[in-house]
Image (cartoon, rainbow, N blue to C red; front, side, top):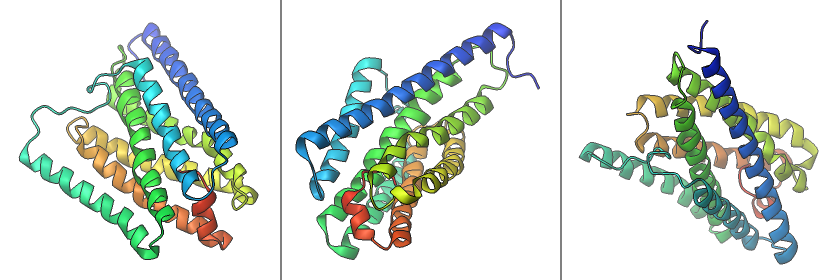
Length: 251
């Protein structure tokens, strides 16, 4: 099956893909470096650790915005011509997401649970969606000479998102609760990322070439999975509280 019109188009796409992979590896490297550096200086525990996790992603996001200078269209954030129906979808999406997060807090009434849920349910998914289904998606889709850009972009971004999860291996290794099953957990995380990445990618493709609807649905799916997965990991190791207090986001 022909994917590209010319060999030059194929080479240009592969060169772009290589640059994206290097950039993603660099992002993970910076995340680990910032996390390790700040942890060494501050030596955070409990709530402070969750604030640190949030701060690392904010720093990374700021650096990426300054370096790449993406437009709203580059990130898939198109505000023009938002209809009332779309606004209602936004409101419902936000309501469901915050209900899930507050539900985690209300169930235990502990501040660290609320902060953990905010980091896992909002900060991390927003960061990753803007990177993958936003900037990377648009850059790949705009590559010239592709016979079916929608299909190739969907498959490529989904695979990249699954491989991206390998970069979080340090999170499992550094946590004494999960270090014994780090390999199994990272594989499980990659499989779930591939499945959810495909689902959200289809939403990204179907819902008006993104707009913001797919983001809200994506956030809801990722939030539900991440929060449930965190609880599952805690049950497996018999220590949910320890997992939430001592584990960086994205478990």
